[in-house]
Length: 262
Image 1 (spheres, rainbow, N blue to C red):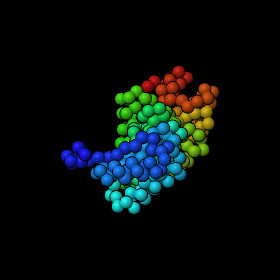
Image 2: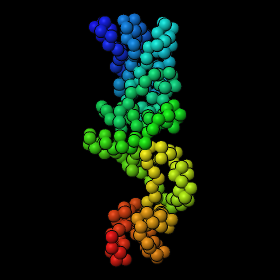
Image 3: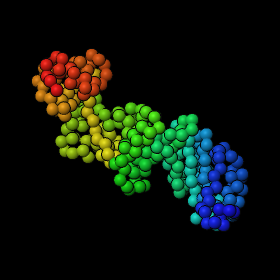
């Protein structure tokens, strides 16, 4: 009442909504909006929900609010990823007509975390639900990582170091050919996500499964002129060490075995 009387917006939030009895949720939310709450927040506090359950819950709340004459009340969804379903649940909530989805950068939050805001934005963009510039999403997540001291896994979707990195020879050869036509073509060959849309680009590296096309492309990027024999030698080195090799390693290799100075 204090907030309403002072024109302060009110959202009524229930914890552990996904494990509550439907009739209890209905009584609480209807009473809250009767008293003036402009929004309600459904919380999957312990990451219990499934996409189907999320859809059913949001649909249920939307239906009884509409039936009671509260069509303008906003519905928020607050998810956690204890079961790894936060992103799927977020889209289920959207499909069921939730108005706002909560998330955090890199999914940082209690226990296993919350819905990753970066992945939510990326997928909303790809889904066609939003049309805005997301070229700074990598910068946003990397800054967050630095500030909170949480490393980004190399295989993290979109912004992880491996997200657009290709070492396999056949794949790399196709991407390299596509690159001659432009980054849009390169994004379309072996990637389900257009790197360019998110301020990133396809990367070719050298590893044990690479081919000569990888080696020649990377050396060209590094402005290193090499003979076919030297390219084969570097490729054999990558196969021997059994992992992807860095540009610093490549420089050291050429300095040591071919007396090329950098």
